[in-house]
Image (cartoon, rainbow, N blue to C red; front, side, top):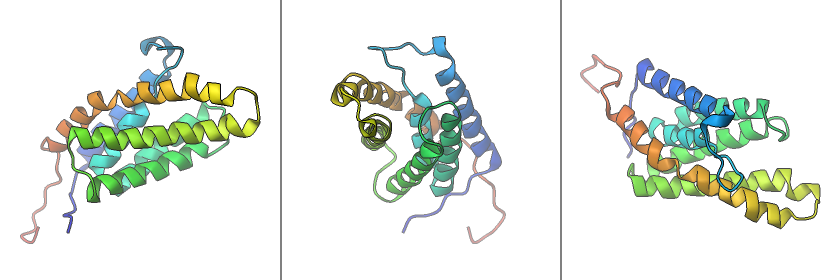
Length: 178
């Protein structure tokens, strides 16, 4: 059976500040370069890494917070990003806890699955349902390159979150039973 980890406020505060900082960098136009006309969403990958290391609660809270922040500045239906990212944070944390290991190849696969799923859902809700001509071209020209560009950030954020997790931020307990 999986042993539940205990972490303190410093751990969650550090990850929350990192998520807010990365979201700010993501939204500041000149800080991240566009490649093939698309910009990445590195905060999404950081949220998945936080969910994978932090457990179910961290996955839900970080996904919901990032989703609400993304909904504020997007054209998607109200609550779409909040709901999708919250559920993806939960699913990622559950898969990382009970099925995947905490190694970089497993993280790359896990983040790749959720990044592809997010951009596919985003494409379906925003583009395919609208009935415009060229929806498949949009998928190939924008959604797929944006998913790949976003996915590449896993190699930057996974070691960072792993380091923060393994640092001595764990909550201290005086109990003899734990």
